[in-house]
Image 1 (tube, rainbow, N blue to C red):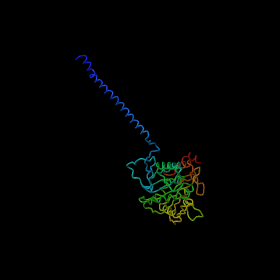
Image 2: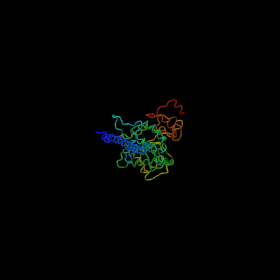
Image 3: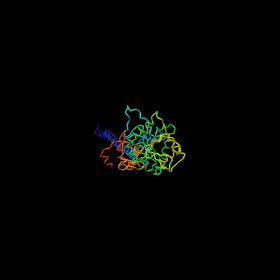
Image 4: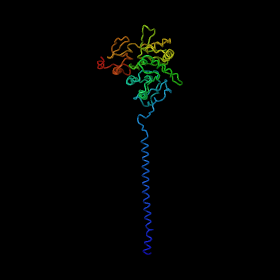
Length: 363
């Protein structure tokens, strides 16, 4: 082969490196394309994540037994009261099934009185956790700004009865609020599938303390025994006036057997009396219904108003001395400090002897 031929054939020989260069340049193009594609995908994912709403606390919807509709009552015509936080959790296997409550204790409360409700929950309602007791607070319809707070409270404790058709006011609280509660309870008890209602229903003011276990053992348990006669019964301080031919229960705390709760509700539905004080209204409705019942009186040693120095006052305003072992229902603790001081005088069995230092502080 001549040098000329060799020179002439060189270009074909150089085609191989040229082809190799071409393949080397193609991966470079593909890498750029892949890099751009990956960048686009990352951008799309980042944008999607950024625009997706975050589940912050204010948007979370946490299921709760109290978010269920009250149109599906599981027992006693009311949703079950949630356990206290310190009592939450499954029962130990050896525990028997929880008995159904036979006594409803309904504390009348203004929707805005959350602090007092918490004090009551933390004092006598925690001190006396008898499964026979069903403790509730009764409030009227709160205005819109308060509704989220009330919902949160009910989701936490599950112990509110809301009278949605009743506006909150001092006048209604002191006249028909308690009777409206009884009408509400009776109406719910008559719904299809509703369980047997409580044997006793108590109304209690939120400035009253109740030695609930002692009251139950002395006044209710003997009357809930299967062999006891179930007479219509009203248990309360007895208030009388010369210008009335009927007695009335003291509004601070009174207890009605279920048949009287129904009778009061039915009579009020027929008469719609709204111009009498609450305690007088209860006596008037029972009188108008010609009810025959046992009036079990709580005397001044059991139920009384409390002074600032923790002395008892009779119905006539007489100073009866310091609170003692007969006490069941101290009343009229308007400020929280006095309420807590009274609560400290009670233990699981009722009134307990307080220390000398506490006595000096109260004197």
